[in-house]
Every structure is written in structure tokens, then in C-alpha cells.
Image (cartoon, rainbow, N blue to C red; front, top):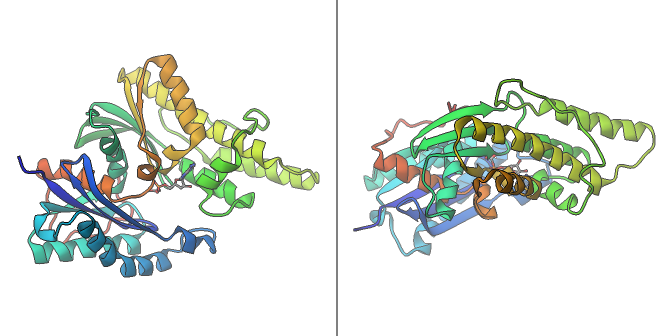
Length: 336
Ligand code: KG4
């Protein structure tokens, strides 16, 4: 039987990406034009500059994704594009490109929720993985526990009520001078550090699977200021190790609660923070103890990419979803 080929397009933040995926599972090409080095000088993503860079990169990126697998748009079955959540100007570039391509080629257009895309990254790495499973989705702007009942049927069981775990890491990385992007830099800085040396506040959400990270961030800031006032140096290795271990333990405790509540024993991690080695170590150990099948995408598929959008778009496509040419960017797209 002929493969179903989906062209995925992603531009929700600072990566312009395009990819071709067969049957939702096999990556034929995966092109990412990252702006991270450019935004580093500003200490974070500058939305207007990100939009302009997407405009420059979008068509060369799509062309490369097709030529890398010797295909043309005529060979593609459908075009899947991230339409939210994300930066409005950045999203608009991908959405407009996808709509233009869909209009001239006559290929169906599929709008993809970026967060559902992150979950689908696991399908690209684990051919045997099928719903139902639980997924902890931890990215720069979102933290949630999702029950994936079927490919297109998901329910959010818990979510952060304030900051995302990624934000809590990025902000403290900036304050201690690690720069941008903070996540990978803090991960590296904490390797081999003493995870018990510094302690931070823990917010318990009684009878709930929700998270709160703003108090932890504040307690880290207070600790840094206190040390400064006392003229003491912070040991960056131990501090970053303790902080990441602390955040990972909150994520892990709540996710294990969800496993116990639902009885679902297959657990996936997804999103940029799923690349964190402290997080992975804690989940590996909890999975071992609780007899859980744990899956997480390889590093390059945890952070933003278009292969995950093509994979998610494939399942939406075979489920009958179609977007019109009035598809618009939805910066605050919700995920229930
Ligand atoms: O999923 P993603 O690429 O973009 C969003 O959709 O948000 O996630 C970006 C987040 C950033 O907060 C970044 O610092 C974090 O993922 N990140 C990490 C690591 N690699 C990326 N955080 C902790 N440890 C890492 N190794």
C-alpha cells in the first residue's frame, strides 16, 4: 500500500522547521533552521525579530525538506502546520506558508496544536507505541499531564497554574549568568553536583494533579539574594544540580500520582524539558520501581521540530480533520 506522506511545518517560537513523515512514524526528512544563536545576545527570544527570521527561512526550509527526500509537493498527501500556541507573529509565518502551498497544490491542510505535536514525537521514536498512555508534557511555556486515550482523543489531567517548568529553569539560569537558552546550559552546569546541598520550597496541590512553579522560582531567587547580601558565593554546580533535581522530583511525584490514579502503566515524556538529564534519571528510577514502561524521544525530537507536527498531522488527517484557508494563528490555543 502507498505510504501516506505528510509535510509538517513548524514556526511557533524560534525554530523554522519543515519535515516529511511517512504514515506518522517514519521521518524522511527533518530540517530545522534555529534562531537560538541569534537571540542569545538578547537573553531570550525577541518576538518581532523571530517573525522576520521565519519569513526569510520558511521557503528555503520547506524546499530543503522536500528535496532531502527527493519529493515534490505533488507527492505529498497533506500539509500539517502548527497554528498554536506560540508567538503570534511567528505562527503566522508558518500558517501563511502552509495555506499558500495548500492553495496552489490543492493538498489538504491540517492545523496542529503544537503541544499535541510534542506528544507525537514519541511515535517517531517508538514504532510499537500506541495509545492509551500517559504523557508528561514539559516545554518552555507549558507543563501538563495528559491522558492519551487515542491518537486524537486526549484529556489534560493536571497542568501548571502559573509558570511552566521550563520557564522556572530558564529564568534562574539567566539570573545566575548562564545565559540563553538556559535549559541545556543549566543541565550541563549541574552535572556531578550535589543534589541535596540547596533546598527550595515545594508547593503541594492537595487532591490535584496540578503544578505550581512560581514559589520554587522565588525561593531560588531569595536564596541567591541572601547569599549575595552575606557576601557568599553560590556553588553553581551544586546549586543547579539541587534546583533541577527539585523540579524533577515535583514533576515525577505528580506524574506517579496520575499513574496510580489511572492505572495506566505506559508513560511518555515530551517537550524541551524532557531533554533534561536530571528529569530523565528520576523518571527512569521511578519507572523501575513501579513497573512502568517509560518512553521519551531522542534529544533532537524533544525540542521544537516539524517531524512531530507531521506525525500528529497524520493522525488528524486519517481521522478526517481538515482546515480551511481561513485557518489563523491561535497564540493562546488551549488544550483541554
Ligand atoms: O519544547 P521546546 O523546544 O519549546 C516549547 O515548545 O516551549 O522547549 C523549550 C524549553 C526551554 O525552556 C529550554 O530551556 C528547555 O526546553 N530545554 C531544557 C533542556 N533542553 C531544552 N531544559 C532543561 N534541560 C535541558 N537539557
